[in-house]
Length: 125
Image (tube, one colour):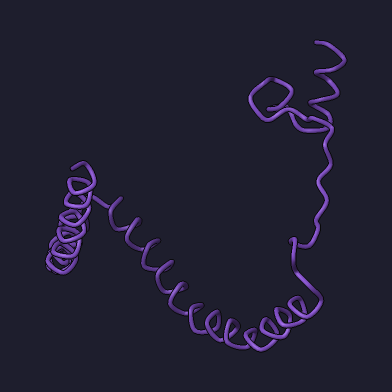
C-alpha cells in the first residue's frame, strides 16, 4: 500500500483510501454569508428565528408523545409478527384498518397519477 493511500485512509477513513468514496482534494470550505445579505436582513432573520423558536419547541413538545406511542406500536407489531400463533389474529384485526387506509388514499393517488400522465401527454404534443 502506498504512502498516499495510507495518508488518505488516516485522514478520511478506509472507504476513501480503498477508492470507494470522495477523495480528499485539499480544498477547504469556509462558511460565508450569502451574497447580497446586508446587516439589516441578517438581523431580521435572527429576530424571526427568535420569535419562531417557541412555536418550534411547542411542535416538538406535542410530537414527542405521538412519536413515542408510534415507536411502541412498531416494536409491539414486530414482536407479534414473529409469534406464529398471534400473527393470524393480528392480521385479522389489522385488515379493516388497512382496507380503510387503501380506500382513503387510493383516490388521491389515482388522481395524482391521472394528473401526472395527463400532464406528460400534454407536454409531448
